[in-house]
Image 1 (cartoon, helix red, strand yellow):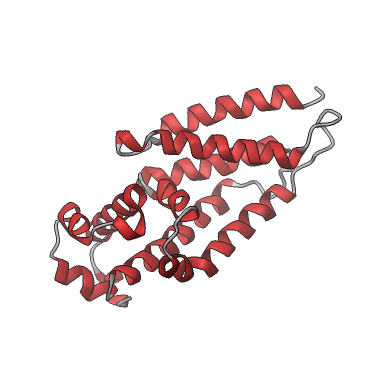
Image 2: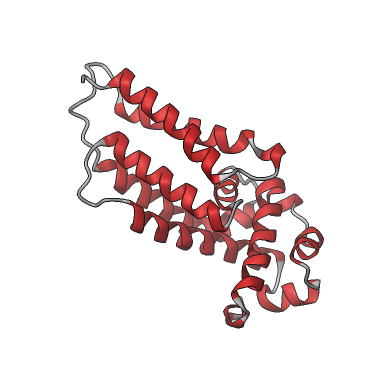
Length: 201
């Protein structure tokens, strides 16, 4: 990646990033078209390749940028003294919603990357993907499980919440983007319901 990309004005940077996020989130790496990206971004293909070198270079940069941006949102949203399992999860969801206010397709892109099958693309983001997974695991590991009712498997409950969250995001693909407020409100409803079903009090 050409570091001069960050010398561009922020509006143009975000226009290019959002266009690429949208295309790769909706179409995946293999079918994502750089023609669609440059058209949405309002730039030439030559300029795109000047900064990123190739489609793979763009995808790799985009994933790295998305993870870094999201982790900053997590750092600002997560209360490091919090130990309640569902409150930690709620704070994580707030960080996701916050990231979508500037980059509407960022979370959809990160989720699509989880199921990406192109070997070249998955190899390019493998290391950064591990960082994201470890960050999430580290947060939820702090969750106090003593309030769960007997027989409630907190790991499976966490997986259910993850599936729910991904489902809310994926269901909105046909609407082109997931609106942050809708995502947050809908997710909070499920978290509240799960809390009532699984906590002792």
